[in-house]
Image 1 (cartoon, helix red, strand yellow):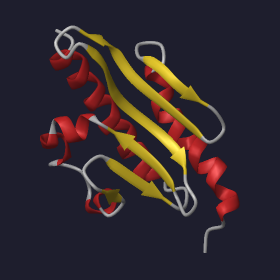
Image 2 (cartoon, one colour):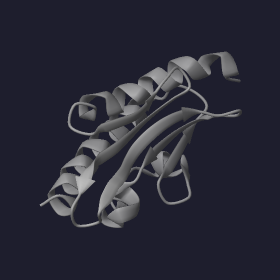
Image 3 (tube, one colour):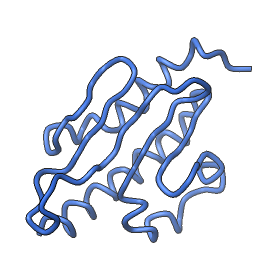
Image 4 (cartoon, rainbow, N blue to C red):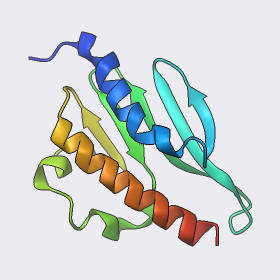
Amino acid sequence: MTSQTDFPLIFEKLRSILQPYSSKLVVKIDSVEGCSLDGPYSEKWKKELFFGAAQVKKNYVSFYLMPVYMYPDLLKNISPELKKHMQGKSCFNFKKIETSLFNELAQLTEQGFERFMKEEYS
């Protein structure tokens, strides 16, 4: 059984998935318990749009990716293993390090970022 003492390491792994986009998006939170990114101001929507976040919770570490909510077709090719970690429409919860799933989530985040920037800011 995985201990909650592993949660900071899980968080760092999930945070590293968002890190490459921090220079292109707006960093809202960046602490040891959570990080959050918004898109730049959108003329289309007249506000900054939430992009994604990672957050340490009581029983798991959550990874939020709003593009999969905005564009559900991004999820059509995800593995059944990653799908099992979904909570709701845009949240993935983890209790242990799962490198292959984190790699898949990183690819999904990249696809989501490209679509997010193309469709919401063009």
